[in-house]
Image 1 (cartoon, rainbow, N blue to C red):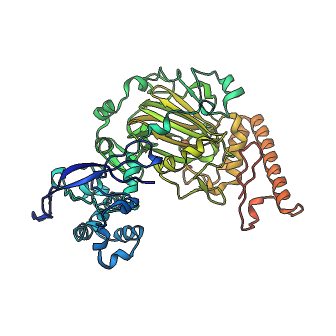
Image 2: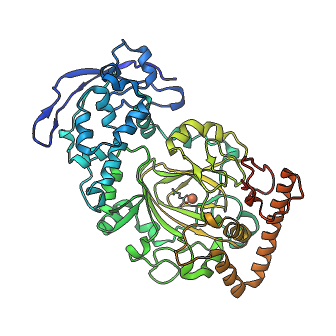
Image 3: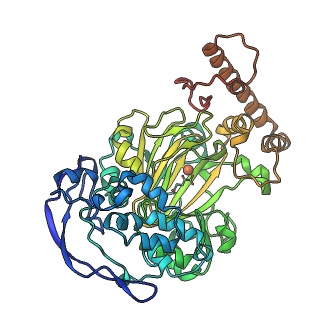
Length: 512
Ligand SMILES: O=C(O)CCC(=O)C(=O)O
Ligand SMILES: [Fe+2]
């Protein structure tokens, strides 16, 4: 529940310069409240920059409600109003906001301006001046030109929630990890130890990447001075590193854009591997990576990851049933993980398990589901700090959040112990296979062919395990649908309902 405001502070209102030089809204001084946090937030969330309050606060107010001054539009729910605003062009959106306070607060919602930015000419440029918000950047408004209106009588969860999410303290989620949940931390491992005991468990290695040159030489500052004009991919945009850094260091987004680039080695002219002058190499303990047999035809497998505090990855499993390692060069990442068969609270998977339906933002998931998730016996949590590397076993669910601005390197791989899972994924979930170049039309058969040429014994064992997995699935299916149907692929029969198989070793129970 949201509690009423109890502190008060003064706030001066400023002018916003119109494009034509005139000014709107008069300058005056008002008081707005400092809010007290609700139970779920754990620690103080600062005042919304416009003074917008959660809906619940309306019932503690003196009846002065900005919604009353919206004319007929007050009949529309907040969600719908925001949706309508998404159809407006930037000029109309800006002017519409000057009609009343409630609409002003709606028209300031920066997510709407992010879409405006992406569709504008600026959205196609790789270098430009980032001015601290999407709206300011689109309109070219420096901070002294930005209007500040006291919206203390605007009560709206839709408007207030993103602000809470982008300011909630992460430490309440990343501390007090129950000891049984702690991801194992080891100094280092040999390949034999990994293969015998660790390939199906997450772990952090604290003394594994110390000798990587990048571990010593990379920092956000050093990358900025060396690669400021290199253009990297950050979700939907390709930005120069200097533009990304100015965004990273000054934004209020609930889900900040995450730099996730798979062509970084070419772009930065890096050599990766054990040769002279290499920037880093894959750790020996993870052993042979069977996707190396695919050479140039292997799917995308390594990424440079850079992001601000609060950026990260919402719950997902890594592609094509691959395993991964993730090495932190600067910063620290909080990981929360679940084995393949777990039902993760707040994560809703589509019937064919091909996608996570409407994933919540990281902050929303943490606020709504973290406490419940942490109590589950399968839950694993841990922090991977600079100079450490974390192992993500094939099929494991994971959510990752950066506790500080940081840099990481990640690589996906196929260890021998997960060959059958990867073969099973490539053959039984062909529609979900991802990351291969378009020319690779049949990844399963290509992989089988390469395995047959280079390591036939491994292939034989992998196919034997694959057949076993498929038989197991069929037996489970028969047990559920009553037995003697003549079908070899349970997925092919649609029954129009969905259920989960809560048994087995977990890496194959994703039948719809
Ligand atoms: O560092 C992160 O955000 C995690 C990345 C990740 O999970 C992935 O690349 O699959
Ligand atoms: Fe991942």
